Image 1 (cartoon, rainbow, N blue to C red):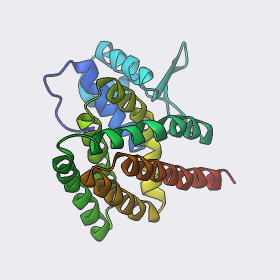
Image 2 (image 1 turned 60 degrees about the vertical axis):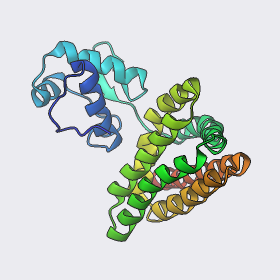
Image 3 (image 1 turned 135 degrees about the vertical axis):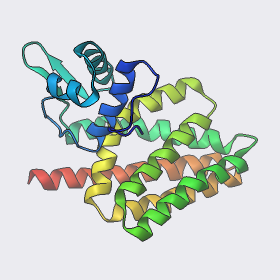
Image 4 (image 1 turned 30 degrees about the horizontal axis):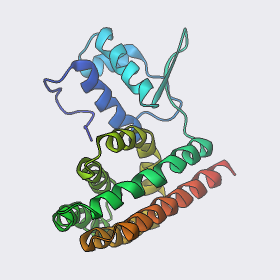
Amino acid sequence: MADLDEPLSLRPIGLEVADRLEAAIVREVFAPGEKLRELEVCARFGISRSPLREAFQVLEGRGLVERRPRLGTRVTEMSVANLDEITVCRIPLEATCSRLLAERPDHVAVADDLTVPLEAMRRARTGGDFVAGFEANVQMTALMHARCANSVLQRLMDQLDKSALRYRFRAYRSATTVLDDMIDGNDRMISAIRSGDGNRAAKVTADLVERAWRTTRQLFLADKS
């Protein structure tokens, strides 16, 4: 995931700024509901309003900001209802991704590759660094999507993940058990992929996403009470 303060690359400026703002929104540097003031954001990136407005358009398509005439651009609010809608879609898609990975001819090599971010998650747990654990889990998810060998599924999952990341980050930040749960669940998922058992990989993944959803949902409900 892009870092807000890294130098801009040679990619189109609007897209680059969108990715940096996405990273900041996910990490709640810009809080849900917060107004994104154009002059302040432009000053931070050293850009004009034109590429910033392009970035806002990209982020609106990702479901991360809302633009309203005369009211400006605000970070999209987070809610239990939105979390539920995202999860209903994520469970079958992520489960299908895991099944496809387990059914690849090189499923053992895929499992080996997934072990790298898993070990990073374990190191983060040992160091008590939930942000590092979150970032390692994001890397694992991106790797799975990239290796599923289904371009349509990959696009659907990547688009959905733009909205899901904020909820995943909130869970990692707020619940001490989340990183342990993710390590355990991903370990079992990788084991199923390594053995070539597509059905087991899909079930483990579905259970993992559902368990994370329940934990995150409880956090939001507790905040509202």
